[in-house]
Image (cartoon, rainbow, N blue to C red; front, side, top):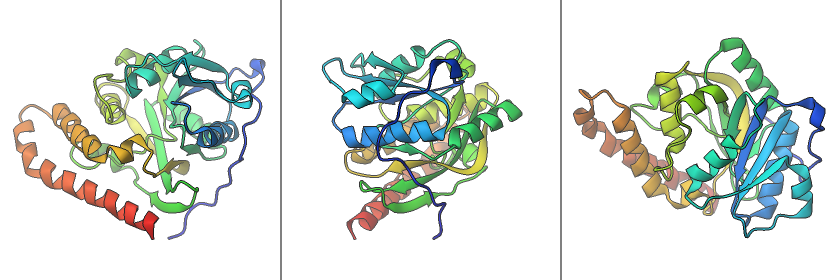
Length: 273
């Protein structure tokens, strides 16, 4: 299947000069145990647009000197889970930041993608914009393209989560008003926030462009904890349903969880070939 050609730098570059004053802030939570992936992630953000990059890491972890020089801010992980780490980074962003997101330390943004998403956010006034996302293996080889479009937003409540978080941007004022990420969730906090932005803010919108790469490998939290992730997403969908519909959701949630788990096994099989 054809896919968008993209190229990424293999090393970090200098942080942007202070007087550019970026409108976008991206948080990278990391345990510091994947330095090569982390370096790729930071370098890809620099090619995506003008961004304030904040890394959240455990206090005991020391980053490479070149990484320290290429990001804008480093804060300590409070050790309360991934959602709490991301919230810590989001809250630490400068006051002038209007749009926010986070990126896994093994994922990458597509070149010039930030500028395109900001343009759409400014034009539409919605609370979040997402696009297409490539799935890649640990070596960066293309596995599959998430080509979900406008239908993915409404489907979140009743079907699989096909709105890619990597590459998306969220309007900071809406995220803050809705109380940031739910720190009681281990995996599905992105789904929960998107559902709240869709229901309680100005909605979400699809941009017909490949915005990011999601790295599918055993070290990924959502891949390694797939069964728990699928179960938690099911609980999140159910709690966002209208109360009158919630009891009926058992009719489709069980087969839906099975389908999602099988889809993950197909990707594992493609990697192992």
